[in-house]
Image 1: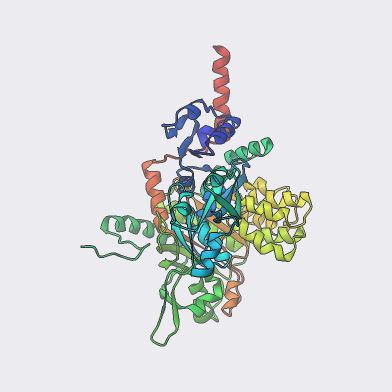
Image 2: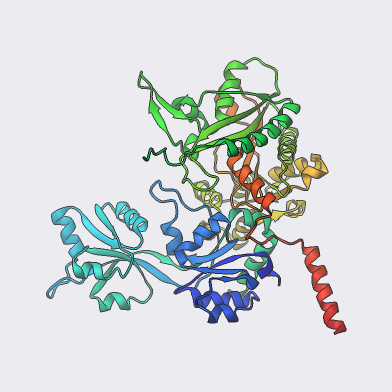
Length: 223
Length: 347
């Protein structure tokens, strides 16, 4: 199929990359170079551009890519929350892979009894500090559940924050919970289940309807 | 020294202003030829007046108080002010009425290329002309106006705001589920739409129709054999299509999922796309109930073009610049494949 000639697809590097490459292969794209060359960003022959997952909606919204694949966590963080404006992209399909859960976790309490340190702080000081790479999701979740929170945005490993005393709680994505356990953190609340999603630029969705529908058709058949 | 200007506003200097002037001159020529009278209204309106027309959904960017404490809003579009003008200054005038405008509007959007908080719009309002003729006239004037600017590759997406509500009622979707579904569709979140439909206690077949129909878009063939009760809206679209002149009709892409996110639209709705731009250049539709809210019940239709976006699209087409790939006509594709097969066969 001439998919690679008609469409530009934004592909996320990182945890979703491997399964995304497999999926593109199933669509009939030649993914040999894409799978092996992790420095190259633009694969013109097959209409693929690669980037970090949180950049995918940016490229798709601007029309620099027609389609994109990224996690629901990214889309939620950039969606219309609490009066802030969201990205103008269409969410077409739940691709099912890359399943992980957005959770709120805190340190296991000292001593024999597991007392949630965030609860303790909230009771005594009125405000809990939450470290996260997802400030909008975290703020929305705390507001929705009626708790006052100070959101501390970090870019790297969130797990460090409660251990070092930067925050009492974290909001982060976890697939297996291993990293959390290893850092003596306990999942207290599940916020959302996240999987990979196929998104589209609104104009491409109309002007390249045939090519996009063909992609959808193939993906639906396979799943 | 730095003297900032508010986010989402910008200065236009002579070279750009001259290009914009060329565009507005071309548009004004066509609109005047079609007997649309140019109109000015105040940039400031009373909030209580604009609120008659669902302004909440387009998010006014600026509100202020006057000296008596009344709340003023910088207008978010020209449709509502013109509805006010018709109901007050043209209360007894004979319909149809034709107005055009070139005016700045103010919206609480996230500023980015072609999307400023202060945006210059050009558009028309055709008041007292019911569907389908009024819609046909608006679409025709829209295409003539775009042609006059020199834009070549634009297309017009055409749908009907009443289609999905009609479909939902016809398929027995409970009243209380309908606003949520419509909201998911307006954002074109088909994953969420699927989830909501699956949870609404419907038959599997109904879920598939309610998910599938709004994803149909393309030529007039998408209006045929729709397996669902949306006959009134579809018949309306067919009537419009039959009456369009061929050069206008070939610009149209039917889109059964098109829902513009402004509440006052009642019937046909449309958006303008160009392959050089990732967002619509403009749009419009029928608003047959809006005038009634101001006290003079008349069917109406209109469109507005964002001049910044139109300018970007024109510049993009001119430069032939396009990192994006073009959708190739299927026929060409097939011919190419056939040629390739032939070459292989002879080799």
